[in-house]
Length: 564
Image (cartoon, rainbow, N blue to C red; front, side, top):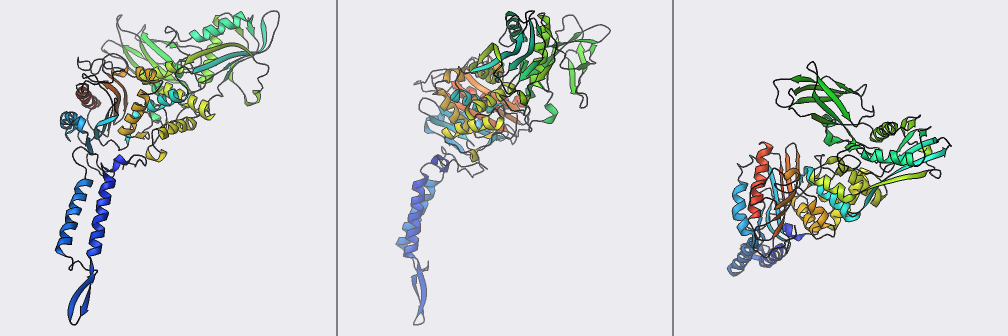
């Protein structure tokens, strides 16, 4: 059941207030003509209160007005159905009638075999809705949730916001270069400490920190490597995420102090005696992995399964990889269970490789260690929100989206938690004219099935961000048809190549595609295509969405709003 938007009268049908006025007029006419029957001298006389005594002229006038009101209130082909109607709810603006003629055949009930489909298309130059189909119904949006998360970050913090990770030391350094104290790494939510922006070298940032430690004259550390992740709360995994998928890279935990997307890459390649050799990246001994993978001559693709022992915490890697010199290495990313301790462990190993002896152990900052007056800054590493937004949307990266969400909560609400970040998203939705009761939001990435928005809400967001001062960062962060991101293999034909910039989304029985399309006529359209509860293969749903995008790419009157 769709929820009403109190600030948008369009949901009741075009001209609805006038239609209600006509209905009220009819009621007054009928009431004035109604007479009550009375017995007078043995005959029935009609006074106010009876329909039989209505004058034919009054009756004719009332019926005409009633018919007029009914016709005026009933949505024509070209208006959205009332929100409580369970029908298709088509809305075809006159300017989009050509679109309707091409899109309606694609919406045949046989196309997706009973799936729920919602569509909203808006021309950006004048904000004109061109096509609607169940556009105010709520749908599970999957990774289209990232549009709201990244838009909130750009709106409240800006593209040039800097994530900051600081390295301190506390204690004295004796004449021999021994630090009589600890090295402390304080996290600021940065998701970019990895090889992604460092030439593929996972430990590049940590090696830079080790060089700074050496430059400070520290040759030996008598204390511990301490991880301070207090910028975020300790809810590393959303409680509603699917339990059977928590060892998948896309369920990696969040933390104010993170390394390599909070995953260890398990790299397998053919070894001796029919067994697969294993390498861990990064190392550090933090993650214990038991490898029982074998090599097969009959395989073309690797079949590898990863499990975690619930008692010991060990990772068990099983399965087979193909044999042959030309076979590439097979890699699987496994989430860690304690991100800040993971980083501290790897940093300790990096320091050792630089020749810096560490007597203590990696550990978390204790609550009793809040006094920072004796901490001395060694290094502050930064990266930008623009970088994070780009990875979150282009790669559809859940870890990045959740890091962004908590960072927004910390900076705007003073609490680095999921609920605080969601409150900021709700503030953005209020700017768009929506109350929290009209939608559902549970996480920043879309992995939760309870994230439910309407196609019209998404196109409203897209229109808002297209006019935003951070529009360039937002739009350029989206996958591009036939070129990059999760759309690089889709819409590669000449009519759509490079014209569609949109966020994909997929979880079981949910497929979403929302973004912008530059038409051949020079217009730019915002669109959202949400599909839930389909029983066909996901590839069929994606082709359905792509066929709509091809129609949209062919639309345009040439007046245009070219900006993409």
